[in-house]
Image 1 (cartoon, rainbow, N blue to C red):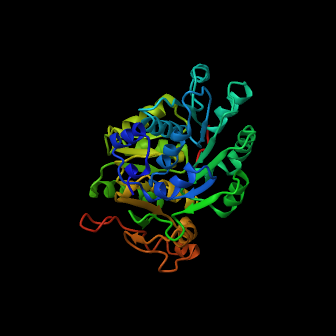
Image 2 (tube, rainbow, N blue to C red; image 1 turned 180 degrees about the horizontal axis):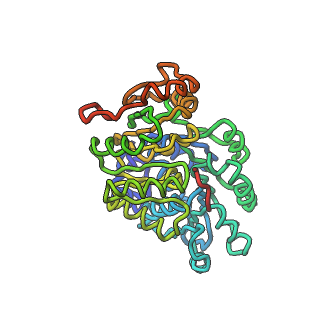
Image 3 (cartoon, rainbow, N blue to C red; image 1 turned 90 degrees about the horizontal axis):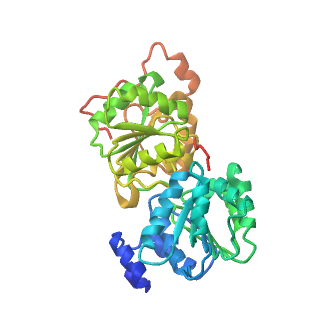
Length: 405
């Protein structure tokens, strides 16, 4: 279905045409009538499927620009996602009088307060900074028509849940609530139900958890061989841009110091950097000034990098949801992408669960330890007399979440 068939206001339709939006994605087509009709919604769709525009387009239509008040509120878990989300809404609303603004930690609060006092219709925020402004009496939710929780599975986890409950309790009147996510574990589904009123559910990931646009490669290896194998892999692939994920900040730092000896156009990002530095890195990466970006999970959720051809897990993700969010930085909006994960003997149990629960078809570069039923104890005894995966030849086919506000 085309956007032109929705009877959208001409100013919104022109903005979408300028953005190159013609055909609606499946999640946009499925959710638009529900959102426009004012129903609460819990929507699940794979990462990179157009969820932001799916809720932003009907949200802008609901806003009355003549009313000087916050009418739409969007909550996201990270600063980077906050900035990306507001930029997307601003593009869609570019030819309207709807004013959109973002507030998040790491930025001058006084400047944010001054901007809010000038008038904002749609506010995008991380929970911590939003609560700060609520405590200071800066914000009023009296005119909020729609509240959106993006990356809802993360927002409803223990680290964020109390903040979300408090924020939602500040909207005293009847309103619409929308939950969007790429993953939604069963325990989070129960909590989501408490946020919604007679909701409708849309899921486009029930039968196929892993996007078909991504090829999933794995290699079983000794940790000490990772660096050499990574360099060989990158040199043997046709790389546009690469995201390399580590499970901790200090691992990001260490890997950067090591890889910059092999590659020039490389940088790193994690929550230990200043917000200005992080924003600059994200901007340069999007503009393809950086080819290799080493990251913690601060870059693992929701961020749209259209030129990323490869995602590499230097460390095995802690669970299936983290794996899906990381690898979802490639293969977006129907493009093809590759995910490459280093697997050590300590990761076998987690990997086996991941493959089965997320319906992944693994491609092994070298030995497949799962097919051999290797047990950790067996591998340990064989360590001295049987080497781990040898570096593959050039001719062979190669195919933390840091909560913050």
